[in-house]
Image (cartoon, rainbow, N blue to C red; front, side, top):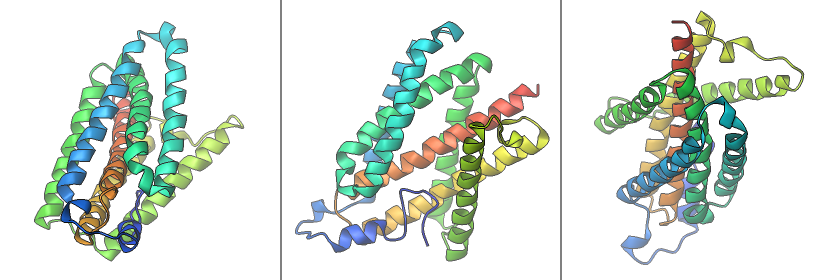
Length: 251
């Protein structure tokens, strides 16, 4: 069974380990090494976000900010795909991906903050609070990544991504699926469900990274594992931002 995170699947670390010739203990993937690299990537996301955030000074600055949004979004997508298909490049592509995503979410966050003051800190706090709570639940055994659990999260994540893709395609014809961005009761319920699914993907990521370390995956997979976690955290943050904005728009 694979993780709902497209950057991870059941063979991600096992395949890497099977083709590696390891001669020293410091050449294998470790959980501590992955944690350290995750921290570095999150720092790079913050740096990128600060750059694009600083360029936004209200609606009149949108022409100056939009190029950064596009560069971040398209660059992040391309670098993410490259990292997924060329895992050995992760030590180089993962940091670049983090900066690109930072540029994207920084400008987007500034726009949301202008409309709903305080929303960004709320979303950031909830994102890291959720990660900490789920990591604690996972390490304590309260939540286990059983096969049924994985199947449910993968199916739900796939359904959400398909729905987003359909909504994106409909946008070319001037239509959209109303509840995805709408602040109706259904729209809020949908966003709440998506937030839960995005959060539970972290459990699958923790499990697969731990498995990679246990199986002795090569050292570069620490960068890949960190990249995968950042992918999920960025998704969770954006979904929390969307949910909070819907709730505040009803006030």
